[in-house]
Image (cartoon, rainbow, N blue to C red; front, side):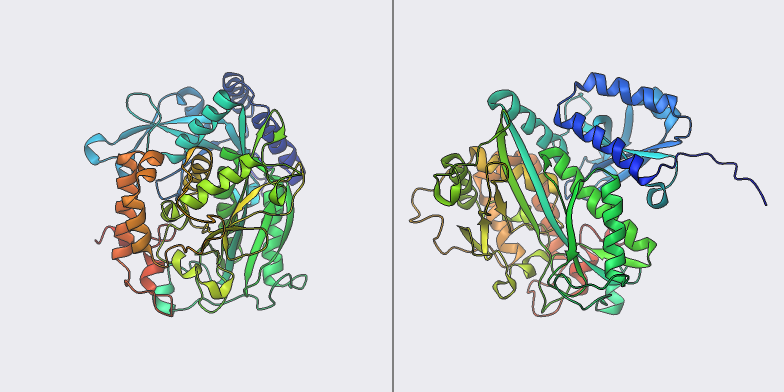
Length: 477
């Protein structure tokens, strides 16, 4: 019997959770970035069993990209990591391709070796332009910059938690093979909250929840959702940038766990017609000096005037920002009122068809829930658009009863594109250049699919989905 020669880092789940929770606490306390950099670099240097650092960043549409750097190389060169931005959709043109990655040492994660490989740690990167400034198409960087500005100017901490639904289907790469199969095959038909211990869906949820817990997500609850083979794994509030990072990690780890089981975790908003689609309900609040700015025990629905102004701005710009919250052709199948779809541009404490819901809360938990978000949207763009709109957007005084007037979100991506392109507000949100790039990407996706949604999911809306496509296929156009 041979003796293993490798001694790469593998940590028990309880130890992983302890390390990740400590890092999360540092993020919450806003530990000085220079101190964190020193601490992380020393850790990497001293821990001989780490072989590589996986650096993560997202493109303009929100697709997660990863680069593995040899640990020794990264320790020496972390301040001068370059990559070819022209290979990333929505980033630079070929003639101006060089971009840099700076380590966000604040966003450092330890991941289970049995799912992510031994000897690796994860860190999110910030994309930097040639002149040393944050790259404008890196929406994570824009979100972080905006959150820091709000903290420095107003003392506001922006908080978010997301309820991300997905489907579990039989077979690996079920989405990529959809053009052949024309259907997805459920692993479970039990329904809401029902899954017997040990069945495939329950096993997947349990394993994914264990990975989440080990990565410091601070889980709250998990369960099968309303549709067959649908799941949701909830976790606690974080600051806005960490919350967006966790969305990316959540989808990443769910896909990895599913793949290891010979299955596919899908975050298409409506992969199967005739059943509820998947949403990403986005719960948000703003705090100052530890006090929730949305709470007022004497206000309507116990929401403060500050909170209601936030809601009114979201409703005013609901159609302007719809394309950023519903980022694919398939997303508009979900906005179907027959399946609890949040397609009405109203605010309500009880109506689940409303774009904005005011959940029952207390001083600690008072929040606003934006329900019209698809799980395939760029999480950084979602949170940037929601917070920036809610804090500094305009309030339409010409609409009577803005919070209850019957207005509707688009039922197709072409209308959403028109609204997005024509809105002055989206230019202020993203800047003219990034707005145009994003609209062009969404236009190309739409034009490769049938214009009318119809009653069946078409292969094109799956094949050319930004979270599913393969480079070879896109290069054929």
